[in-house]
Structures are given as structure tokens and as C-alpha cells.
Image (cartoon, rainbow, N blue to C red; front, side, top):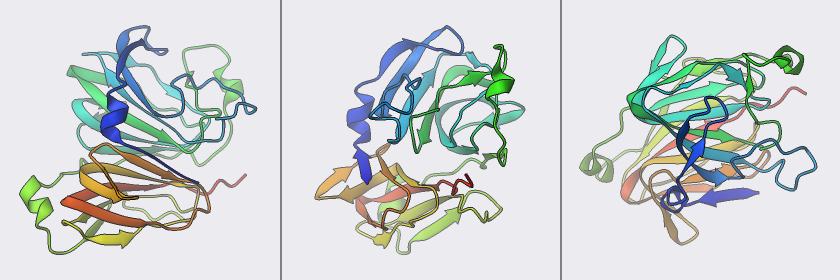
Length: 252
């Protein structure tokens, strides 16, 4: 199954919410699935993709925690840090399931990040300052990867690009299929997505993507489930820079 959402439409749903991690008010919008991720496996949406955007308040801190599913996070605005590492636009994080990370600290102008997971079930955060977290930990690769900041093209450079380019965001190649790349396409260029491994997100970070006769602008997403066939990726008239985020195959 292929799921897609127009980023402009999703962001119109931005609202102030209370952070489960800090108790503070910040802002959030849902892309796939509900913000509340405490559903059990019997919920109709449990195995569907789950994605949302969070706009942290100035100097807000999200304490160390983990999720029961793997996720990609893309830091797209403001500034801040994750643990000892600076994060700023566009930094791409991958985190394996049951892998702790944080704290995530927003700078004085806030910090924006998109979180993308292949399923909603078991994606609720488990905080390390709460009792019982050790009992919820399960074994896994424990990867927590941060890319160098990605530099996006200016509008005229992107639109008039003559050759497509693919840039790997992580130095290592992983046998389980995990990968993160930035693909750059000039106006009207087309190529084919990967397929296989543990599912895939296409995340439009600059320009636009043509899909089913329509245009998906910046911050739009497509999620392709495990085993889904490859699809065409076609740039709109302004060109396209898209993150191709491939999840690893689960060993269990």
C-alpha cells in the first residue's frame, strides 16, 4: 500500500498541544495516524504508517526516551541539540527500535522536527526517567545515526539542474537495507524509487513532486509499505529535492 499526504494541507492542522515528555505547550500536526500513539495491536490503524511534525518551544527539553519501532527524524527549522550533538536544518536522524536517545533541546528560536515510522503500534515514547522502562527494552542493533546538515539548492539552481544526483547521508552501507539519501532532480526529471527492505518514506524537502496528476509541495510525504513495488519519482516544474528514507528489514 502507498500512502501520500500534501504537506501544505497537513500543516494547516498545526495546533498547540501539551508535550507528554515535558508537560509544556508546543505545536504539532499529524501527517499519518493520530498523535496519540498508545494504541494496541488490535487498533485498525496500528500497522499503518505514523508521521507527525513537532514545533518545540524556545529552550524546551525533551528528556531521553525510546520507541518500540524504528524511526527517521528530520530537523527542518530552528536549532538545538540531541545529546552532545548539534542539530540544525536539515539534519536526518535514524534510530532503531528500543534505542534510547536525547535529550533533545531546542534553541532560543525553537526547533522543528518531522518523525516518520512505518507503523503506529508501539511507537509511544518510553522515558528513561520513569520507572519500568528497563522492562520494556528489547534487544536490537541500537543504531542512532545523525547525518551532517543537508544543504538545499536555491530555487533557480534546482529548477535548471541538468543532471540528477543522489547523495548518501550515512557513510556506512547496511546489510539489512537501511539507507538515507537525498535525490536532486531538475524540472520535469523522473526516476524510480527503491523498494523492499522494511518500508520507505519519500519526503519532499524542496521543490515539488508530481503524483497521480497532482503536485505534492515541500514537506509532503509518501510512505511505501514493505514489499511495495517501486514507483516513479517525477519532479514538478520547479525541480525536486526529496529524502529517500529506507527502513531496515526487521530480523524478528
